[in-house]
Structure formats: structure tokens, C-alpha cells
Image 1 (cartoon, one colour):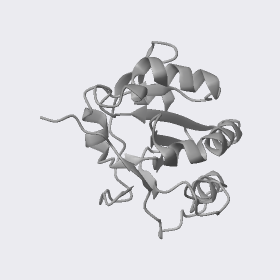
Image 2 (cartoon, rainbow, N blue to C red):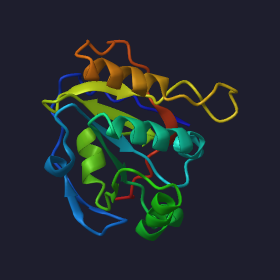
Image 3 (cartoon, rainbow, N blue to C red):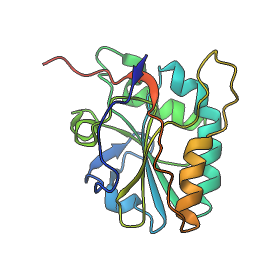
Length: 185
């Protein structure tokens, strides 16, 4: 288990990226998916039990909030040589199986994950209309085997605040999950 201990400051501008979507095989850049309301950039992967635990509700949250003008993108930066289940072909299969309402991008060089200071999966970065970081933290307090319901409460609270012009709560709980599987140098 890993915790996101990254000290990315709220208000930090989103880092540009251009990565291939494993489903469409199209190059997707930040400017292609940025919303005038809120943009959610999440680091996930296929094999992590923490991601698997929230996946159904994550798709529900993304579907619901996309209808409200929020954009979502998922990025997988794991080393697929060490974790073949996190490779692009397997990512595409997972996205199709769960009908992801967002692009699922593969960060093969791991440069984007490093630029965002992402540390674990799942990890959520929510940007406001100006692409400034408004929320960085967990989906909710549910974890595999802790018997708390999967609701997406923390992410929903941040998005609801942005959509209604309210301040996003400053107290944000870090993500908990599997560490990103960095390639050995």
C-alpha cells in the first residue's frame, strides 16, 4: 500500500501532455480534454486492487459528471514490462469491458506521471476552469476489506463545489493505493 505524499500545491497549473488513448489509438492532449468547468486527471492501472475496488463507482461518477460538463481522463504509467496486465492491450480491454466514459492513456515513458508527481493508483487531480489544481486526493474513504461503501464522496464533493462556484474544501485526504510501478533506471 502506498500513500500519495506529493506536495503539489493547490493552484498549481496542470502539466501539458499528449499521450495515446489505448481504445481509440488517437493522441489525446490536455487541451483536447480540458473543460471550462472542471477537469479530472486520474492515475489508475488495471492490476491494483484499490482501483478494482472503486472501478464501478468511478465509471458511474465520470458518467454522471461528464453530463454536467466535467471532463475526465485516466492515465496509466506502470511499467508494463514488469506488470504485463497494465499494458496497452489489457488497458483497452478493461476500458471496453467497463465502458469507460473517458480516454485511458498510456504513459509509457512515465514522464507525465513524474511531472504530476503522481505516486499511487488511484490518485485524483481535479483542476478548475483555469486548469489550476483545486483538489488532489482520494476518491473516498473506502478501501478493499474496510467495509466502507464505495461512494466517490471526496471526489464528488470537490466537483460539486467547482460546479456551484463554491470553494473546494482545503482539507483533502491523500490517495491510498498501489505505488506506481516505476521502470528501473
